[in-house]
Image 1 (cartoon, rainbow, N blue to C red):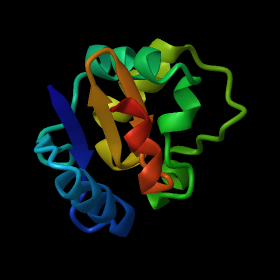
Image 2: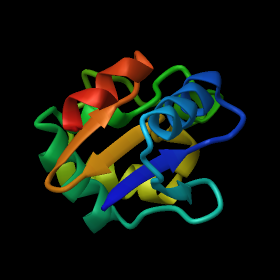
Image 3: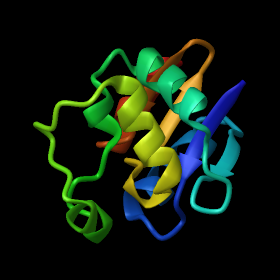
Length: 115
């Protein structure tokens, strides 16, 4: 099963969805702003990415400035994931999860490594 954490307003997210569809892949599309993943689900994604939790945080979002967060903040993975779950606009996009691995679609072609 393939899941795409998607924001249709984001060009990279739209490009990633189109790329998957061109490859004959029909992902389950999760509109994460409408249906935010839980902190536990985000922790699993971070583990599947094999990256630090800060890799899935959009620090340039206005909400990040409002919260006063920065990439060098000392927080645990759990704390970062709880913060994103409570503020889903902070989630980097797009993220594709396939089997037991995940990739961030920046650039979109990066997600093809999963297949």
